[in-house]
Image (tube, rainbow, N blue to C red; front, side, top):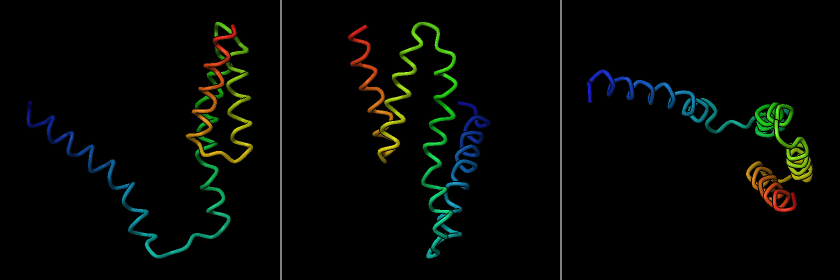
Length: 101
C-alpha cells in the first residue's frame, strides 16, 4: 500500500474524529437548555423522514408498499418509539405485507 493512501486514511480518521469529540470536550459538565434538548431529541426522526420520504414518492412497482411502510413508521414514531424500533417495526410490517401480496 502506498504511503499516500495511509496518510489519507489517517487524515480522514482525524477529520471524522474531531467533530465527534468536540461536543464532549466543550460541553463537559454543562447542561443544555430544555428547548435545545427537545430539538436534539427530534433530529433522528427528522433525518429519518428526510431520507425515506423521497423513496416513498418515487417507488416504481407498488405504491402501497411505500405508503404502508411510511404509515407503520409514522405510527411507531408517534407512539414514542426509539428510532431503531421505528425502522425495525416498519421493516417487520413490510415483511408481513409482502407475504400477502
